[in-house]
Image (cartoon, rainbow, N blue to C red; front, side, top):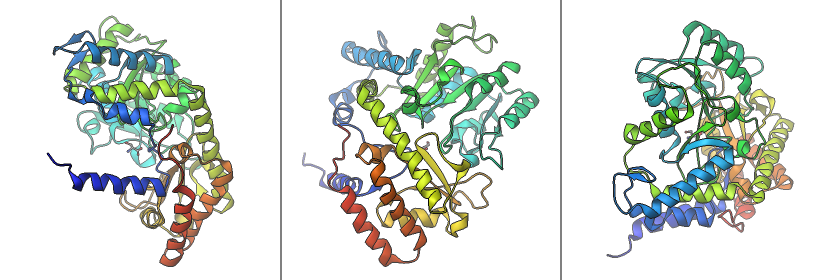
Length: 424
Ligand code: DSN
């Protein structure tokens, strides 16, 4: 067979795009060589339905070891008691949790997608809003912070079985004890989806949900800097005092429900090559270098928010605690779509994003979301943040001037092209 030049040429083109641009999509990152190599390994050839030592296929002795290491490292990283590392994505992880804990038609309470939440937290266009009856809390209109009073009010009125916290576009930390307090009043479970800030939580730079929330899900490819995938965990203090769907109310019974909800509930064969790569990424995340990296992500993000504010940009909630920033572009007379398109022309990649109480549709939006995990992996430190913010500002302030945008692109390429693409 000859090499598929069409596809490999496209991969080369994408590599060039990643190399020369400023990647500010908050959910993206650049993996290490080891993460990449393990993901592209011969483990992709293996079927291993089931769990380590309990498979439905022969020849799983080696992948069993790989998966056990991934589970052990995940537990160590987050201080969890139990983990399932098989979900193919964060959405699959959430689907498994909902399947394990709820019956169709049960009520769930999640963070409104249009305020920064996620599709799988009850959106009506997603399975989570089709199979379950979803209710939403949002942010306070004035502070643009999570409205815990609203959460409590809806929780008391609707008595959902599951409260979901976590977001795709919320740049502040969460008050997990307060959410637990609300959940305890109505005997609800809490799912904390930490897909975005997982790396900051693992390195203790943000509040720890494992102490307060019953079930944790995450992706592994955002701040965690691993392969694309998902994970489910139960915290050290897990207990189920409510005797909801599962019997006995202990960790083991919940873990077994979650395991069955992943396979055979929602998935078939696990991706053992991706699980190997998750193990490598968790190993990297346990190092001091990773902690230094996470601190730099947070510093870069905080400085970027300040620099934007200095240039009269309106930042939702007035700043950030984590790796991401949500910019309200209304005062600049530019939509999120326009900003995304023109920044992309300058090789600065961002995504348009709804802002709370947005008047524009999700296809247009009034905001953009930016994040610092990817540029920090490529070695950007505080001294270059101001230059990057100047570049963003130049594009947005000259949104219809293609000549200026081309000039910015040259500067962007100069800043990025000689930096290594891979983490380590
Ligand atoms: N697509 C992810 C993000 O960008 O946040 C959410 O699924």
